[in-house]
Image (cartoon, rainbow, N blue to C red):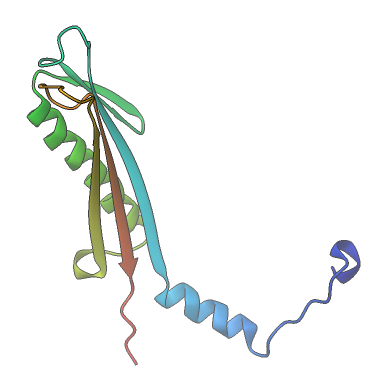
Length: 126
């Protein structure tokens, strides 16, 4: 390997044990992005599109689109955490919402970006 990448490779003593411990107590991190836009800028107060990984949905109101987009993002993160065998108080989910609207825009946002991030940490029992 040293010849292949032209570098000195140092492996710490007990590296195989450290990797196993890291896998047992490590973190799981998942982020999901969901986008909301009006279906038409000509009628920006009705019909909103939600774009999420693997889906595109349409809702009559912005509030329903936002509610569903948040639920979808949380479910994606929670599903990933379950696959990592993390749940409940082992997982912390945060939601960041950014909206875009021009000055003087008196309608729901032209665009809403939701970033849902889940961080899971296994508890170490010593």
